[in-house]
Length: 142
Image 1 (spheres, rainbow, N blue to C red):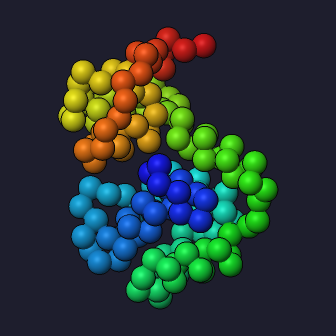
Image 2: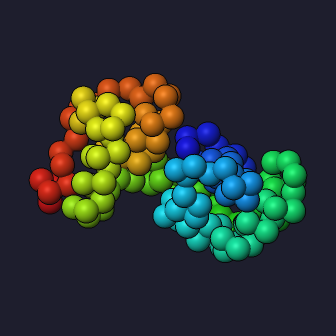
Image 3: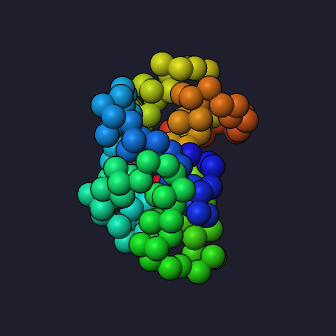
């Protein structure tokens, strides 16, 4: 999720998930998931267009060239702000918080300090996630 491709966090992961769906090997991955949709909306591309481009390009370089040509142009400061939002974004409803907690607890219930989907994905995929101050549950936030 945190790896930047063409300046976008999540793009590399989205390409991998799309390829897995096209190959029928996605397992528990979901494409397009809400994070994929956020990236596609920000870039001005539909999921169908992106899927077609991934299907038509056997390597990531072809997808990147296509993405570069199709994505709406944004100033670097806007892209940086969007990336930060994606990396910090956490559950936005009590139901999503419960789902987040369930997923987190399946991997490491001691990590109550996690609050973002990016951190949860890193934890699930075995990457090191630095400990943070314990996050307040959604219900306790104003």
